[in-house]
Structure formats: C-alpha cells, structure tokens
Picture: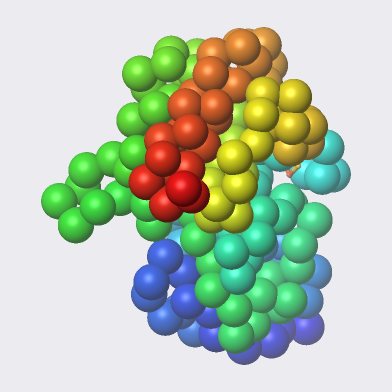
Length: 161
Ligand code: FES
Ligand code: FES
C-alpha cells in the first residue's frame, strides 16, 4: 500500500508516495538519486547505509521510509558547501588517507557528523566503540580513527573550550 510522506532531505522539501515496506535506503538511493547512501548487508550490520534522521545516525536499510514522514534527513550530499566545497570532515578523511575503496566512507562520515555534533572530546578508545557499527571491508581502521580523532580535536578546539 502506498503512503504519501513529506521529508526534508539535505535542506530540500520532498513529497513522495512510498510503499509501506520501502526502506529509507531505497527511497534515498533509488528514487532521489542520493548514491552516497550505500547498500551493503541490508540487515543493519555494516553501517554503509548510515544517514542522519533528525541529527541521529541510523541504518537506513532497516528504517522504513514512512517513519521518516515529517523528518529532516541528511546524507553526505548535504554536507557540500555552496560552491561544492568539501566539509572539514570529508577533508580530514582524505588528508588522513581514510578512504580506500570508499564503500564504507559515506556511512562513517555521517556518524562522524553526529559524533562531532555532540561537542564532546572523545578519545580514540571511545571513538572505536562509537564507530563499531561500521564495517570497512578494506580494513583501514587506523586511518579512519586518525581522521575521526583529528576532526573531533579540531572541532573541540573551536567550540569546546
Ligand atoms: S546496508 Fe544498512 S547496515 Fe548494512
Ligand atoms: S574503504 Fe573500502 S570498505 Fe571501507
């Protein structure tokens, strides 16, 4: 059965008819063309499909689109600046060589946005736990943690002290 939903996706209001069983992953990726949202395991185990719903990181493969009615959604596409410039989080991932094949990267970046948004200065061990729901098949976890640590420290310097 179809249901009309309204969402704000990356700052734009969207109205869509969605099947009651449709995942937010499929809606964002297949219908709105937001291909940063990756389809990995589809059972909430790998984190590749992570997006923010009302600022909270969720696995969009196990989140029904109809639950997103009236909510704000953010994907990596929404992080771009007005001139298409990369966000500091994306730059940190590139500069720390935290991107290998890149499949896990958008999900990790959205979790980083949530982590940084807390304004807390998490240490490396805490960051490890916070990103434990993300699997990187290229196994470059050290560089991913370096990027996370760097962005947390940079943000804390600006806002936390
Ligand atoms: S595709 Fe959603 S958690 Fe793996
Ligand atoms: S960079 Fe390849 S899966 Fe993580």
